[in-house]
Image (cartoon, rainbow, N blue to C red; front, side, top):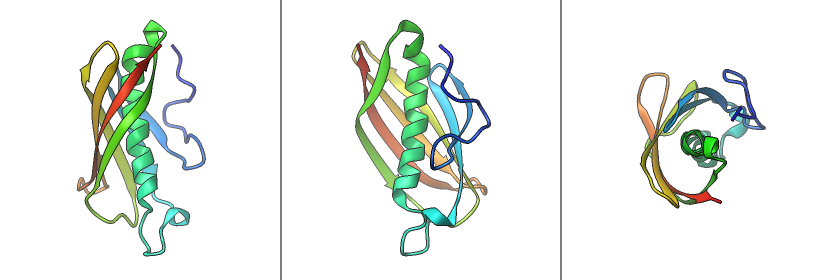
Length: 128
């Protein structure tokens, strides 16, 4: 199944960039934009959460789309570890368990210096 985007090109209003994917893994990037800062002068947590969610969803989809199935996040947990002010953030997701109805996936977000800025876990329901 062909993805609805091109690797290396910005996608959507936040400009997330798909970098690579294999069945069960995905990497997406986001270049920090000051327009997405919160009133405290750092990246809004929702932007990081969206990046992690996008990478995790893609990792699961890369495993189930060929079977005509699709996935949707049923639960997600995020840990925001450091404030983000500049650079490119890279989210790498990996499916940890794929069952008949659910998938468990996690992701790490790192900055340009390799520092861990966020962690996420999610459970995705597999449909139909």
